Length: 246
Image (cartoon, rainbow, N blue to C red; front, side, top):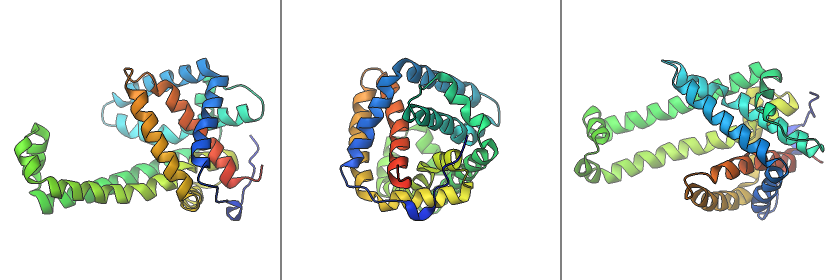
């Protein structure tokens, strides 16, 4: 497909209420092709489970291919924006649009997650007793956990502080790669800048998203079949707000 070639300087800061608007409009995308969206989500869930069962490479494959599937769903949103229909086949559209760059993006993300995990494990080793603590944690020993609750909270806080910038860099990256033919590294940088410039609407977005997640999980998690498409469509809608002039 033709890229829109968006320069970095075009990113815009949106008002705080757009955080709610992205999710609300995302529901509209879901509603217009509800059955196809649900079908794509179920199929993606099944594929993820099957891939994760592969020995040695299962978990790695899921993470590396995630941007490819995400890009396909973004292309489906783009089709809806242009007046077309979202179809289940859009889930695989990323395999014929900048696939190599999307895989590189997934690999970069995976390596960053591994690096954050290593930092957390090093902190656990030096602060909480290393392998002994991990064994007690794995066995669910409540006494050991309570004795080290402050250290655990510190490790989690550091991991969160390291992961948040990564999430900001990754949030719009698949869309920028597949719709604009931007390199993975440049897409990560642009995505981070776009999120940083819109920290207030994303704060509202996160609060509302958290509430909706709790509601979605209550009915046996079935609400996630609605919330998932809403979030994916909201990423595309926010991408258009922040990075395009249309």
